[in-house]
Amino acid sequence: MILAADKNSVIKLINQINSGNPAVIPTETVYGLAARIDQPDSVKKIFTIKKRPFFDPLIVHIYNQKQLRELTHFESPIIQKLCSQFWPGPLTLVLPKTDQVNPLITSGLDSVGIRMPSHPLALEVLKKIDVPLAAPSANLFGHTSPTKAVHVENDFQSKDLLILDGGDCQVGIESTVLKITPNLDSQKIELAILRKGFITKTQIEQALIEFKNNYSFLDSVDKKSSPGHMKHHYMPKIPLIFLSQAKPIPTLLELIEKDFAKIPDKIEEIQIRKPIFPIKNWSTLEFSEDAALASRELYDKLKTHAERNVQILIFEKKPFMNTEAWEGFLERISKAASLSY
Ligand code: TXA
Ligand code: MG
Image 1 (cartoon, rainbow, N blue to C red):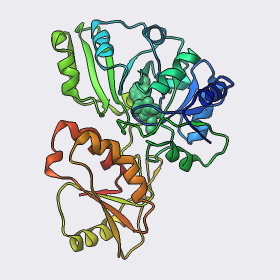
Image 2 (cartoon, rainbow, N blue to C red):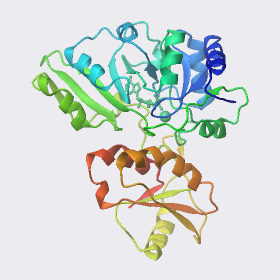
Image 3 (spheres, rainbow, N blue to C red):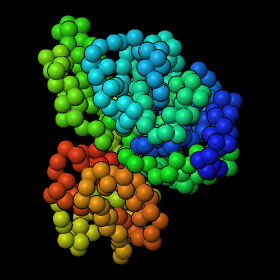
Image 4 (spheres, protein in one colour):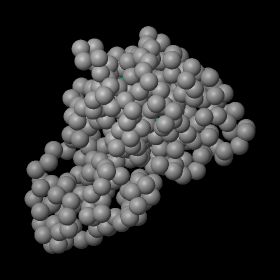
């Protein structure tokens, strides 16, 4: 059930969460399905409702530094700087966790993902509950993330699930995930971006310019340190084809008929969408030329195009998308694609 953003709705939603039932809050990135971290049964329900595997860790949402210190004991001027520069906002910090964080939330890892969202309603709920909230994106596992309250309602089709309507998410793609690890040998801090997003590596480097001798950026991360990061994700209902450069339609149709026959039905638990051949109709996705606007539009466009009566969706990467600002957008849309050329 979608609740209009008024005082009574906020109280109703908070009561629901406090009574041990996850409910949906808006954030500036995407809507999140939230449970109190001190209620393991409620956290477990998040996985059941989303049909999410337990190996995929959840992000913990906070509203102040006191909560941060309860979740991690690791302190460094680098962390302070990142928090003051980017919080509240779309940056998740993965930090060594304290015993207060249930392994259920972190999938047994010794680190925890933490974020202070900037959406005023998310902050209000967090402040009133006064316990950090674990919240993954409020969509079924593998589906496209929700950037409008109605997206959540359509995905879950449950009347009991309360969804606080905070309008359209302004960032529109999930937060940048930055892992921060102390390296005891070199005395330096290691940084690694596990998921790209609105906040880029260059912005992080600029923020940390005065500490540039105290950290190193790892370019690649092993699969183990980035669970939940599958090859495919965010798939719309109709198969999407990703083109890294323009291709004439007849050539493309011939190619995909051959290539779809070769790919498995499931990759890493994610169902790969496939069309029925021959292909007679398709829809081409067009986006704003501004990376931030295109990211804001992305998930809604994928969802609305997938409601059309077409057999495939086609996205063609444009030359102006070759800048860092587009990386988060491109990472999402290429994972949403069944085939890429
Ligand atoms: O913008 C966002 O981050 C949204 C909103 C609701 O805050 N949340 C979100 O959560 O996207 P979710 O569950 O869909 O994505 C969480 C991902 C995991 O799949 C994993 O890749 C990474 O964050 N993650 C979380 N904790 C981690 C940890 N301890 N180590 C490594 N990766 C972690
Ligand atoms: Mg998600």
